[in-house]
Length: 64
Image 1 (tube, one colour):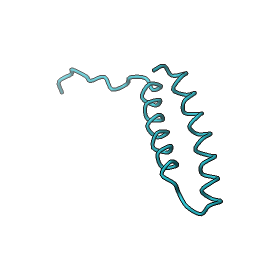
Image 2 (image 1 turned 90 degrees about the vertical axis):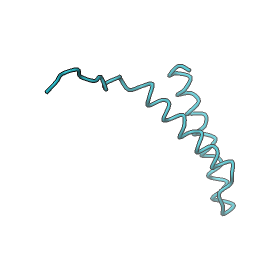
Image 3 (image 1 turned 180 degrees about the vertical axis):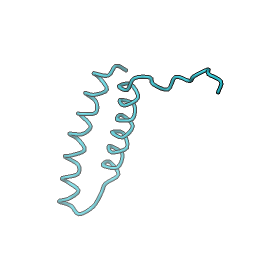
Image 4 (image 1 turned 60 degrees about the horizontal axis):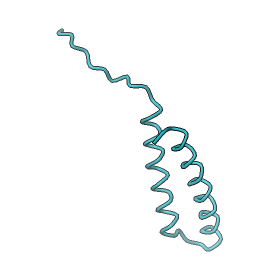
């Protein structure tokens, strides 16, 4: 999955999640769909952060 598609998916989920959160506030309780959307968004954010950050954990072969 490329970063542009991943970002688009995150934005779509954020919009859906916001709508569901508003409905929950009006109805006085959290639904399973909201929890599921939140988890999916968290997973996408983690995947996006992994793709977006440069590889900096190159191990050194130096002997002290």
